[in-house]
Amino acid sequence: MKIRQETPQDFKSVYGINHLAFELEGESQLIEKIRKGNSFVPELSLVAEQDEKIIGHILFSKIKIIGESTYSSLALAPMSVHPDFQKKGTGSKLVTIGLQIARNLKFEHVIVLGHKNYYPKFGFQKASKWKIRCPFEVPEDHFMAIELVEGCLENKGGLVEYPPVFYEI
Ligand SMILES: CC(C)(COP(=O)(O)OP(=O)(O)OC[C@H]1O[C@@H](n2cnc3c(N)ncnc32)[C@H](O)[C@@H]1OP(=O)(O)O)[C@@H](O)C(=O)NCCC(=O)NCCS
Image (cartoon, protein in one colour):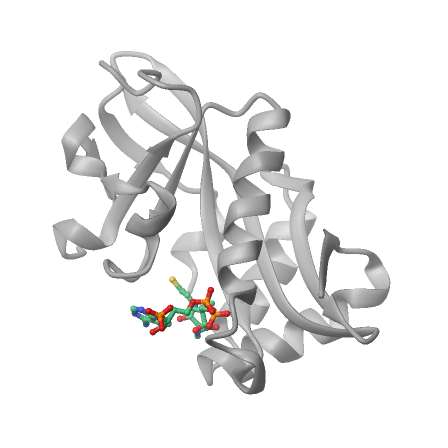
């Protein structure tokens, strides 16, 4: 199984995997909209490929934290693994490699709104630790952040602003 950057030939498979994994089309549609906007980072739309078949996908896109100043960050959303291939480490590989690419691209931190028992193993912690707030009503421990550069979130608290398409789903 290899992780690589998505190409236009993968768009249909990525739509299908997200539809299957979430059992809804909202995330698939969100990805299609993000690709067309200026928050899209092509190098951070990654697919997991096995035997020339796409079995997983992860997307990180640009967001802002509006605090004392405006800070550029990334949101991890969404991610999905085909139900037949879950619990085999594919999701973990997508997250780990995605974070490494984000670091190489000089992003300093990543925000995720997701399962509170899944993301801490990669180093995510409650975003409230840094006074980073979510624009949506969510349980505090589901809204997390990770520093890609140690200490870079100190004094960067504020309200996260997602690209407009996130507010449409
Ligand atoms: C979440 C998801 C991407 C994980 O992919 P994966 O390839 O199965 O992940 P891994 O094999 O690396 O890790 C599996 C671990 O994650 C755990 N996990 C999966 N879904 C979870 C959830 N909703 N909450 C908490 N833990 C979860 C599994 O129990 C397993 O734990 P274990 O290693 O202790 O057995 C996949 O389950 C999926 O596509 N789910 C549906 C879509 C979704 O919820 N996406 C995430 C949105 S935040």
